[in-house]
Amino acid sequence: MNGANTGAKQREAGKAAEPQAALWKEYIKAGVVALALALFIRAFVAQAFKIPSESMVPTLLVGDHLLVNKIVYRIWEPQRGDIIVFEYPMDPTRDFVKRAIGLPGETVEVKGDTVFINGKPITEPYAYYEKRHPFGGSNDYHWGPYKVPAGHLLMLGDNRNNSQDSRVWGPLDTRHIHGKAFIVHWSWKDSAFGVRWERVGKLLR
Image (cartoon, rainbow, N blue to C red; front, side):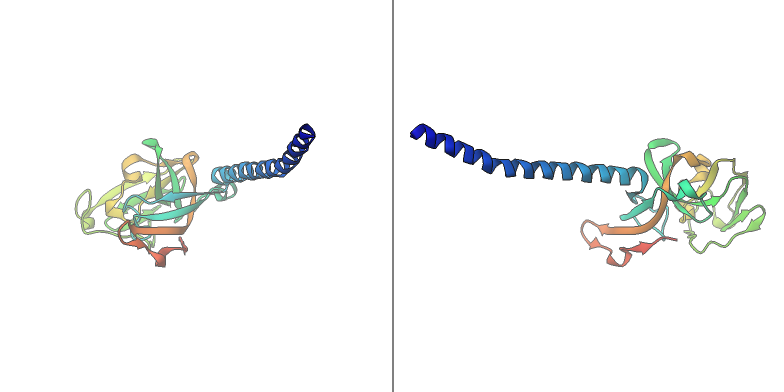
């Protein structure tokens, strides 16, 4: 009798364990699917990036976290004024963010605080000029003219006097683009002061 009781108990325990095992299998399956979906989205749809420098002030601040649309340039060509995240040409392990100013085939020239495209000045409400300038006073600063090669973009930081951009490392090969930054999804002022709530959800232009 004791053997029969033991066998019955073991069968009951086995039956009880089956739903638990099935439940764990479902958890694992859901986790694998979620991970695969996250990796797919990161690779092909959207990706998060953090701003580490002041080169895009005032549009982007140190501590801003961006979402980048990775699909848009599979459909459309980059446009002047787009904020683009890309591999830094001098070190592909680093990511940079700048604004597209010169398009393929255009001639770009900077005189003082004005950018000229094909000899005509353009309006840039996003551009910011600090008093200091890496190459002298802003009034007598001159760069270019430079013709942007096919398949490349000329990238400038919004903080024009404090930006390492195409004026330093040359044009950006469009094959190195990650995507177009379109929203600030999070922003830390710094670890001591917390969140910049007024910037969370800010659409980028």
